[in-house]
Amino acid sequence: MATLSIHFDPAVLARLTSASGDDTIHVTLSLGGGDSTAPAASVIPHGPLAGLMQAGWLKPGTVLTFHQRRANRSGRAVVTAEGRLIVDGHSSAFPSPSKAAEAVTGNVINGWTLWHTPDGSTLDELRQKLDAE
Image 1: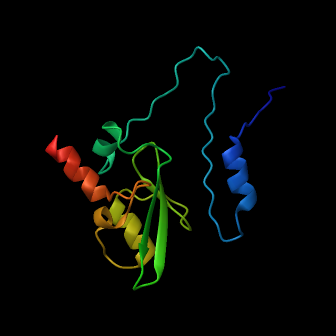
Image 2: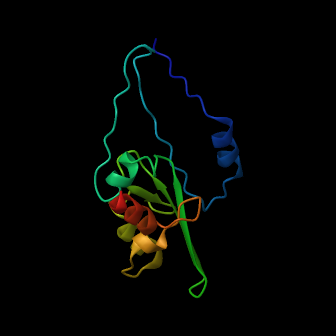
Image 3: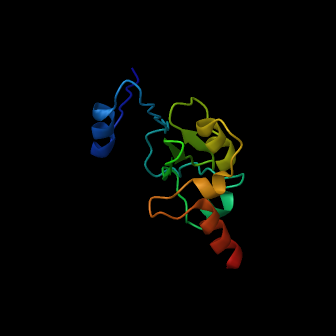
């Protein structure tokens, strides 16, 4: 009989146990054959964020945030390995920063200047840095 073992990093368990009923938690499950010598299938990012990911400035799992004081609204998104954004409260990933921002704000908006990385940079600042290199 096959056995499925799921191992979570302690930080993931802490996040799961502290989540409220309104939080959306996304879990990615990768199935392997159990052979630790087998190479893992790599996912190549595509779409608008691909360049930043290939340069190493965005990684899968990076949390992007924004806060608009006047509108009193905030957003949180997680970068996927494919280069899409999973926004809290939404079940499907968005293909671009602007589409993800629009899902939160309800308005057409430039997501490149709205979303911030954990170090405070906007995606647009990273994109300009990439273009300069």
